[in-house]
Image: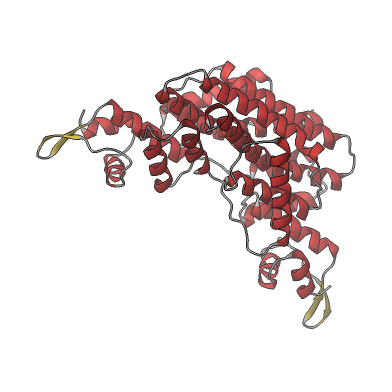
Length: 209
Length: 209
């Protein structure tokens, strides 16, 4: 297909498609004449992936490029591929320098992960994300006990097992990659449903009947 | 205490505190001399709340002002207060104009909420958040069935019930307000733990042993 059809079918303007080609996110089309290039289904699939990552993951171009390169490279194992996609996600937080509250909270996070026996790298951004929330909860004078965390740990384990178990049954790399990306997108499903369920619970407990 | 001590104890620069006063987020201190004002524990508590909302909720000043005003106003019921806090949270998404995919996905979201019997307003931002993810999943050619959603719905309901049930036992408005804010902050606990649990599950299923 020509770039105009690719634009129509992907829902993206021609200029945006040309930008993605320049940025190395999308392979060039095959030249069919001096000023014409042909695109195929792989281009369309790639554009859909880029669009989903941009819209939902809110990812910058550099992060999308890293994910796309990892997807393309058969030497990147499934676990590393999943890490590439997940570590690119927002929100990310930067550890502040010289904040004693941060240091203490980070030690609690590391101890919690060790106690749960989870295999998580030292540089996993989610460690800092959890640290930031612990700091904020303490600034509001909330203590965070293992009992407070238990329902969240249980929900997280059940969902992660459900998500990864579904992938593990499938041997094909292409399908596993798609499934992993869905898993990353499902984080927002979880956030949205949690907020909706909170509103419903609040309405039932406190709302005008 | 003087503003210098308030700064030290809250961990916020004096300039930031003065900015919050100008913006109406923090009440002025009581003038104790022509160029001096006294601050007390209520100022410190308010600064901690503002800091937590800024850092974790990533909220703009206007949204924090709305929350602070709702907390102060005893005429605002607990359910409306919770809504004020929750509706201010990011990520927020804007419905695109004239996108047929969006319209279809939004109808699915509305049908899901109706089927679950959840009491959620039409203008709840989480409806659009869920709609956005449905659109993105479909662009990647994933169908989203009730079976796919069930584990997320179950986790969301269990957590919301745990969070709101804890609040309902407590009659005091001040404590309920604090608990609601914690509930909002715990969303990030859930996100972080979900990502950590995913990495662990991926390591166990796909990782180098």
